[in-house]
Length: 535
Image (cartoon, rainbow, N blue to C red; front, side):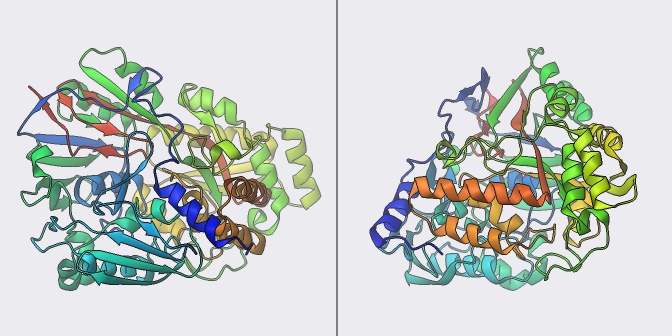
């Protein structure tokens, strides 16, 4: 790990948490489409939000999906959050952390006026319990994010001290996501592994019911510390994978908000006076993951897989060269997204210092030569798992047709999204199309996925050089040097061709004009704390 001076480390951590690092767009208007709607609302009523998939486990330590994060936004607050400018702000903490000179000790003050949905009080001990569970629970998707955490202790009823193994610049950004969600210790003790069916956090709404594949129901929590700003009586989240059906339900009024709307549906909604469109720039990416060593599941030591794409990087490069990112954006996404070929979004905390990654152009001739050089039998057969949405199906069909010209025979396997995650986590796949909603600090887009045995490394990728660069990027304080590290890291990841970045979404949501107070920020979440029906 590259050495840094003590003063520089502390300055870098302070810079990150001070709010100076933010999304590059600070306006509430993006491309003429609103991120927020501040019209007055009345009290009462239930809001129905349509999701494009059924969320996975409602357990902050284990959950992996964006739709799950949207549900958590209604019921599980975090130590920190981001605002519409992408600035990190306190939520369950009362202030931004203080950091020791060597960057290894971080102190977080905790709210004194908050209760969990089960009526028990939030305090420092509860924060300690949750942070240790996020770090240590078997199969925790937060383990990689909190791996640098050596100890965490309550130094007072409402003060938490985190001691780190080494300086960890992304920490506060990590605590602004699921790793910063605090769960009721009483509920954790009572329900154990079944906490996912009885989640209890601090939030504007509390969990009441889940019917798998149909709905998740929350009701207003009267004990919420800021209950005065909560206008709705409740919110229902309904998984509706088909965007056309979501749009039809918006038109009929059966739902009031449609999340992650497809470009074709957004264009239609823009012409309708009773519908309004929100969007924000994305911090994440959409990709195709290839199984190069996941034989025992997440967290296990990578092994050998006897498939052409796993055996030879030239086959994986050939597959990537068969793809035309710009054409995919035009044909599948109405030219409303952006081609992408790396994990770092233009809205990332360090994006201004990172050189733009040049996406490889489609080159069928070179792809065919690589397959010949690799000595593989053509067509190379592989199965590509895609989710069951029409948009994912179209994406898969275009990739299938493009790859065929280069010497691949792809079988598409439409799979319900939560099941897709379970199967790919277990290593039961050749390739799968998925994505990541993104984090402000680039480490949140990289470490858990690309580090050896990372918490969400479903690809079985293991490269000591990548591991070293991840560690260096986490500890490096100087922004210019950190940008250089992520330049090198992006190139190294690209050379492995195990995670092929294809496009970067914009976060689109559609709501009826009868609803206001909805907020859509760069993390892609639909926030409904202040939402309500117009007066």
